[in-house]
Length: 281
Image (cartoon, rainbow, N blue to C red):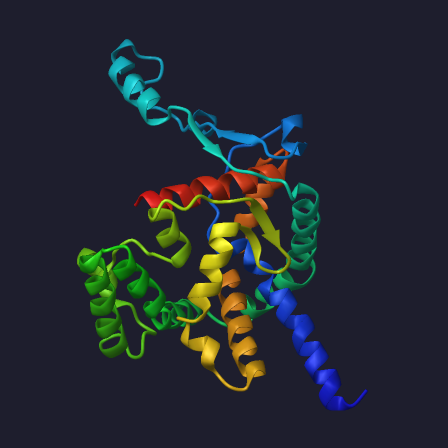
């Protein structure tokens, strides 16, 4: 094997490690712990109960707290989220595959990177890539008829690209009008009434659904990094972005696993509930 072929092979292996943060490609909020044998059945109905995530309530023992508790009960009423999981055997295998990639390769790389690069610099890099993906969010705002939000995205891009010096700074964060809810094609399809479809865990890319997988493919064409040539350079840029982003979030995935009796189910529930909320925004 030539040196060039060997270098390409090493690049692909490292990229796989980098992209194992795909479980973090879309943020997954901490979910309640789940211990239920029915999680192993296919085509099941998942019930996510906000009451499982009960925070402390001021005055819990006071008689005067009745109104607060009533409001609490209303806020944390049971929300049912249905998702089909006919590929559970595959999904669990890919979940464990991505889990090992994270702990064995991505996390050590991110920790080493964090030890060398100070946090302010890493935050600037994150700002730059977020600014660069403005087309994804702006186009999907327009597709959903959110003209004002699309204008906000454009305004944020202009401010951050100029005053923020190519997006490394984020001065637009101080203006609520320039910080609309972020949109992607998966959310756009959801607003058109298209359901999740079956739940899918992709190797390297992490948790998704059929709808979100189609959306992810569509958003790829709106990401400027996708057009960098040669392809190896585009993959390296994407890999660096993920390592940088992971260095700012080390511990989040670990917390989910630690708090869950069944991490696969907890992450699936959290992902589906999170995406449902994003579609409703």
